[in-house]
Image (cartoon, rainbow, N blue to C red; front, side, top):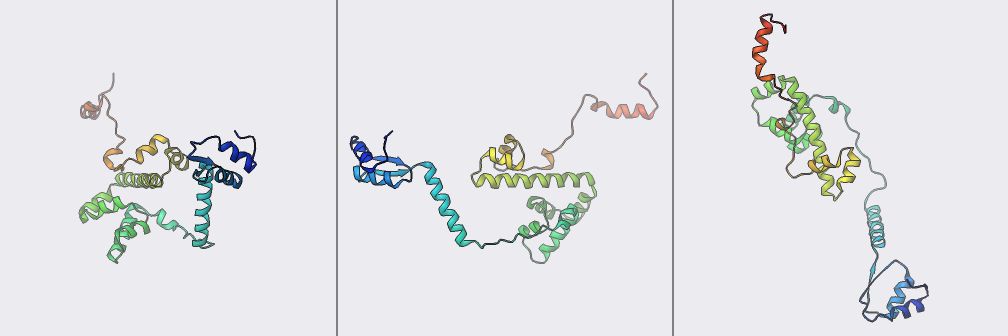
Length: 218
């Protein structure tokens, strides 16, 4: 440590080291001038804190110059949120028939892109059968919500955000954030099944027949 902030004292101290090529310093003009006085060939580098501070200030000033003072965010249509997947699908399909892109139709009707694409590939009979299965519809809606969270995690990672920060912002575990950010990861019907087997399952038919015949456990 140099026990002085005087330009002359700092310069004299630095002259003792002939092999100096680079020096990291803070934003002080005193140190800048002292280094130049000691050896103008020395490369001066701002310390990490001041580099980030200067960059942040420059970015903030640039954004203030470009962006308007007030930014209006459109209110979310609560009616769309309350609609079932079936209603949102047919509304999105109607939008597409009227010239909207698949992406815009999904966005306007709060339906996941992959879900919409899958339904669009079905024929009318398959669609009717699909929506008649209420449990399947409920599961698909849950999967859709999960996939929206997966997309959000991936977007945050693409912006350089850490798993720790993502987990705090989205209220999920770090392990879950890491899993969701995996390339190609998406929730599907086959990987969200909650069905669990047990030792009695293979005897289900036989047990049911015995119950029908009025057998008891005694």
